[in-house]
Image (cartoon, rainbow, N blue to C red; front, side):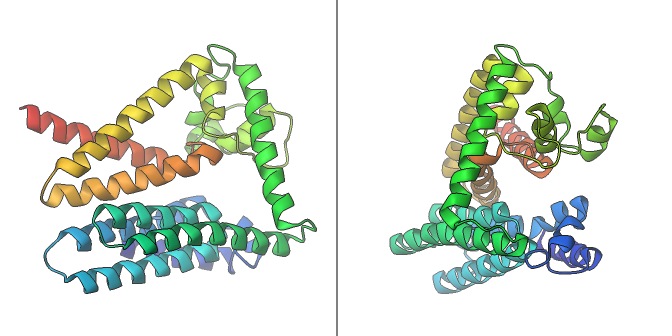
Length: 293
């Protein structure tokens, strides 16, 4: 995972022609596919934390060192891409995975959580400086939160009980399928922006926005119930399973929960996130079926 992710990370930077965090043009030039595959590096780091924490091949101190080292490497690499989401994903994933395998001390859990907030603020400030946005940090965060909730409110009114777009928002998570749709639909968030009357940017609409515009209030209720059932069972299996499968389950649960927490604000509409959820669900069902048989 990490090797493949790092290769595509380097290739993505070469194609972009610069460091996206400090160069707006480089960020706009990032290849979506290369960027998505490069995210395998932090995913691999989270799985690695689960592995070194549960296997008997490493001493406690060595497992901690490996976990801390790859967490910081992942943070550094993802920060250079300029995407706050992936930085928060690394911190949350490391926090959850490390706590489940008991690598982190209680004080360190608080430090990692604090680091997540500091990273969010720091990357927001860096992005605003590069973009030349002349507003304070708190105004920037307040504006984003306000915009997200306003968009969600508009989508709720548009979606009604049964939805409006019949799954098109989620289908648009795949770039090829998005290009087949009529009008401007480069991505789910861009499609949502067009629906609310904004054609120049993409917008977030919380975890409820995509569901309510695609499937209505009923879809939100069913979707949230399914998500809770899925996370609950994945956690129970991660806690009760022994051996090598526990390593995978802890890693998958850590990543799924991290993306779910992030998705509260951004929505769960990214292709890599949806694929991760599908893989995790398939693996969970596979284990349950084997146990039944």
